[in-house]
Image (cartoon, rainbow, N blue to C red; front, top):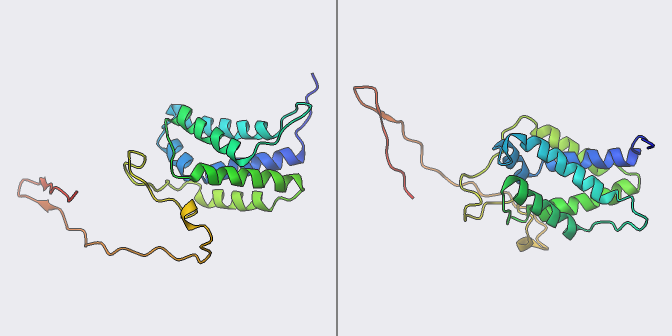
Length: 184
């Protein structure tokens, strides 16, 4: 058995995959919430290795995975390992990024890897933001890169919604807080 060090291209590609997965909101939430059990973080790394292996197929006539194949793979792993049935289009976006990453690294370029690593570094240690009940029938907001806005190049900032001021909790003479039922 000949064990040789991975090529610099392989290392660069793997670094890019790992960083891209670390910035995927759906996977960040799944790992943070331990949807994959106590080994959720290990499953994230395992997914990265699956993706790298899919592209670095050593067979005599390898076929490079396309974005659809990668998306199916991501959705399958999220469903099987994290019990998350994603319908937010984010897997498609990650898949396109993975294919772009492979093409770029194949040309000997590492710009995209740098971009993904920088994003991952900025997110490190931050708790992923999400809406309670996302995935339970509610369509949760994605980052606006869905199919609905094809050709819409002007990036409008999201409009801020005015919220009523939060009321101070009422504490009775015994020190108990009165719980008020919220609007639904």
